[in-house]
Image 1: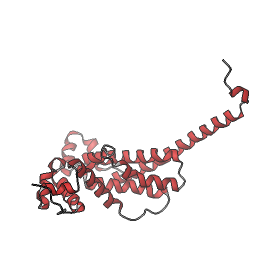
Image 2: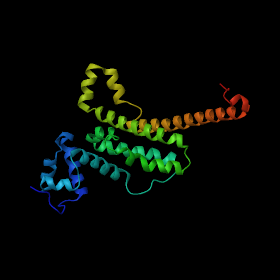
Image 3: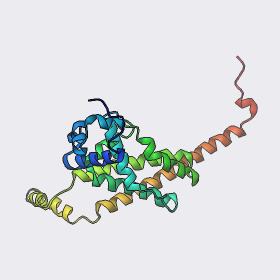
Image 4: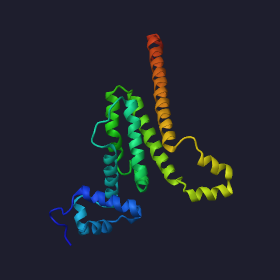
Length: 228
């Protein structure tokens, strides 16, 4: 059947429907045919908006991230809004765990720029050293994705905890009486990442400045290469 000249569905509705399929039945359940059937259209209608399944997956991630971050501009200094961005990403991934592997392949889906571009520009506007911007964003994104994936895999039910107690009572007790929740640990590590990268970049800039000053103080003759 030829593709209809006028789109019968909107891109947003298609992405929302794709997310429902993924959340309920997993990534493998999503297909052009399944999505078209859910929307009540022929598969050709989807090609008005998407080149194929990979583009639908990428669009679904963008759809989820847009919902997580909202339309408002984050407030406060970068030390306040940057960790909040990471928390928003974590909440979105925990709400839609099937999308974690897709987000982990951000660069493969060309989503890296859409996820990092706006924060990078704002960090520079707020005076964060340019050398620190990408390391901070890369480290936070990588940790948030891996943390969300680990938390999704490590969720333990009461029944599983009871079974573990029969095999390893000390570990079961430690898990049941953990002093920090996963969200608290996440916040602590995020702050540590920012502190460490900020300090490391400042140390590196100091070394660069020292090398530059040393080169400037050397006599011109010493800096000029010897004649062959």
